Image (tube, rainbow, N blue to C red; front, side, top):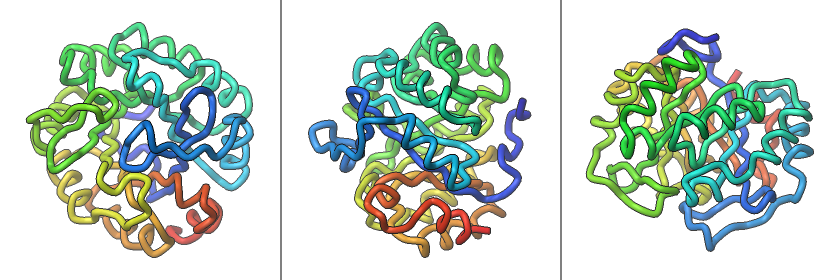
Amino acid sequence: MTVAGANPFGHFTVIPSIDLKGGEVVRLLRGEMNRATVYGSDPAATASAFEAAGAELIHIVDLDGAIAGAPRNLASVRAIRAAVACRIDVSGGLRTLDSVRAVIDAGADVVSIGSAAFLNPKLIADACARYPGSIFGSLDVRGGKLAIKGWVETSELTVAEVVVRFREAGVTAVIVTDIARDGTESGTNVAMFAEAARLARVPVIASGGVASLDDLRTLKPLFADGVVGAITGRALYEGRFSLAEALSAVR
């Protein structure tokens, strides 16, 4: 397993995202559940295509679980696990150690914990202790503050406060999502990601706004500062570039 705080990849990489809603592959606009675009009904086939294109890690978001507070798309996670050999990261609704265990039992190599780290501070430390090297923190940012419960609510915690809590708990990496740009293909918030990496002192994975290969090329130099990868979804599904092209652009 990966040592907490160590680079989980060894180089800058591009991580494709599969967002699940009702068992379908969707993308939301700015995190709004009622603004979902459906891109497919077979998540396992989507994952297989990403693996064939060179994915090292696939980021899976259980959108229904994020709202419900417990996993709701475990069948899709199991199907994806059966279809691919690459690592998969699952997030959404992981607010108890039992739910973390359920997702890992379904095939996740890594789980990303967001809201629960602050609604139940003991959970993130317990999860890191139980599954060392397999826990990512998930920091969803709206207006400089942490958004929680599937992005429905905004807390008063700042980026700086959150990343310190994640580091102290022992996470392997922190996924930082700029909600204002998520699903918009409006370009990435380079300054925010760089600052998060500086504060976190653990690897940061950037998420939100990737629209072009140039956006990925802009993020790649941040590898030296601790930004180890970028998650992209809508741009892949809309055909702005392929995953193979994206991986080539950052190598």
